[in-house]
Image (spheres, rainbow, N blue to C red):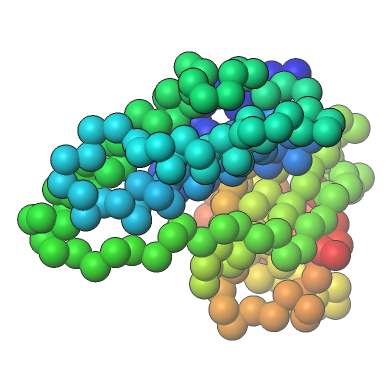
Length: 236
Ligand SMILES: [Zn+2]
């Protein structure tokens, strides 16, 4: 199993990077990576809380204690220790946790500059992503046998996006377009799918209960009306 690398996890934790499908799938399956991301988010939150400290050189003991608590490495060993937790030491952080601390220190230092220069109010923590609907996309007769896809509707703060992945399709002659379909006579274009994956915004005005079908069509360049459906699936 290929883990999400630490740099990538750190960027996700501090909100500089959005999880891809592969990340989300892996984090659901892999307890070690999920646990590490939770620890990183905890440290990132501490970094934001402590940004008023001007000379933050290294995380305090309480940071280590919280990391230890997050990763189950405190005090007594857990009854069923998680399979892939890196360092078994109790008081001394392992190299991966040191990298986490470095990220926290950078956050703290950067935050201090921002506060000193601009007297910015403390930002709210990054909103967590919430999957509110999903759909397996099935190939339609015009698509090759290998075609396959998946869509998720994700809420981040007050934004709602449709995150779509499509595999096994040839490069389009024109382009692939993502639509929401009411199942009767109305299709709403949401955006273009490039490179097999896209995040497209779902406007507030659209009630997904009225448009429960996700459709991916092949379009000629410049074609306004709906083209040829390649994949479709029902949001649940
Ligand atoms: Zn992993």
